[in-house]
Amino acid sequence: MNRSKLLLTLIGLLFLAFTACNQSNSNTASKDVNTSNTGGNAKTSVKPQPDAQVAVLETADYGRIVIELYPNVAPQQVERFKKLINEKFYDGTAIHRIDPNLGIIQGGDPLTKGSDQAAWGTGNSPYPNVPAEFSDIPYERGTIGAARTNDINGANCQWFITLKKQPAFDKKYTVFGKVIDGVKNAEVIMTAPTQKGSTKPADKVVIKSVTLQPRSNFPAS
Image (cartoon, rainbow, N blue to C red):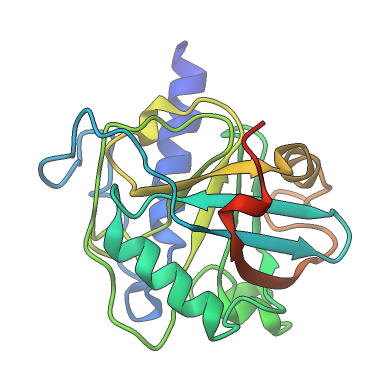
């Protein structure tokens, strides 16, 4: 990786942590977040075992994205994600970050239901943060991770999908699933226009609903 790409990746890591879910920490300085901040041991050599249910995201304009979940890798994060889905927490939210340089899209912020774009990326759920559940599962095309603040245990409700290999994220953000259908739809979202000088979409990318459905309805490709 050349110096300019490394710099872009480091900046992206800082931004990803800074715009995670804990609103009370949204103004915390992100200067302490870096690629050496793993925050403890990571699970190693754990083969992901898909949950009996998948998360099905239906967008307003970009089709469906189906995510299998890994409770044996990140049990608390999967439990939180499923809880919020059952409460329809994510219905009507929007993708608030599109970053083709890092190859990610990010969503899950309830504040995106409103029009105050300055607040997008700082919202959280009514529940406590979820402790880090790092593993050696790599961030690659289709991996879903838990966004967080600069506190390694600052994940709450927001998530992001990587659409290319991003080794700078490995063992630093909780992996809790992977896209098994609709990854091309996610890639189209990643190419959507953004506001000038920003990673916020130029046009709102709405998630109409997120539901839990049987994994057996979506055979492995």
